[in-house]
Length: 300
Image 1: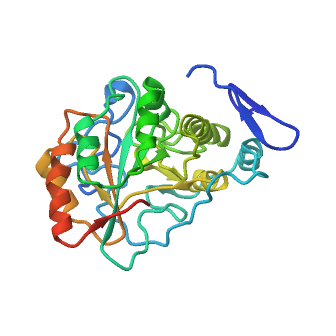
Image 2: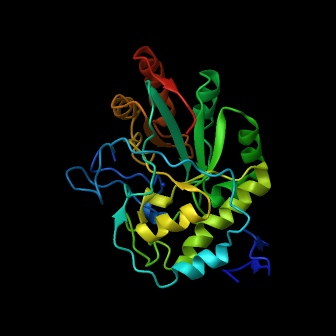
Image 3: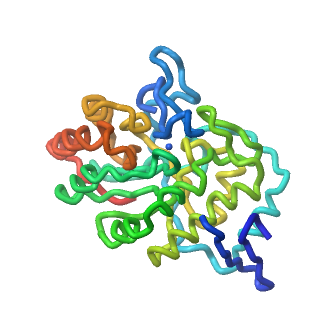
């Protein structure tokens, strides 16, 4: 048994029964959740953030499988990595897709919904903008955000503009040693890392009828063992090229400025759970400007 509600069958497959149920600027955060709620807050100006980055180089994207291969068992993956010691940590490790190869000026927009107290709203103005402009996007939903209103997840999934991806169960950095990012403790073991990925995989599949192809950890931080775990579970761990809204703390002008750093094959990270943020207004200014520059928007 892996955690509460996991039942391992003799054929190696797993079933679960659920019981109830967040760096263009180096001084900015990518979590979009507040410290008072166990998540991160903006780093003060002039002070370096953890693992500061502006943009990641183009890397060869991993082609994710449509679903977990039948022979793969979450229990077996957790057991295989039990006690493994990681060697690297960050937001841009081998095995993490931070950009994608493209022959033209294509850009992928991704939006995180972090969930939890004070973080389970929907930025409807942002969603309305994407629909009106016919801009495809990948939506990374945390299980807490999903469980706050499952019907809105189903509505989003029904729109072909949107692909539903996973932002984990409890919005934790994905680690096997409990390593923290932005003062948010990570998962403490291979078993917990598997649960952080797999329980939301099953929840999304249950609600939408489609297993998520992509996973982004809370804070987008991973260690190398956790990266391997995500890949073995059949999802692609995703990073980013552009930190567009600094954890939904940026003004509209800052969002537009961040998006102006787009590169072909880039992946923009922003947030969709804070309707009072500058994200929607910033994207409303950035999207036409990028189109005028020759960019098209694509799914991952």
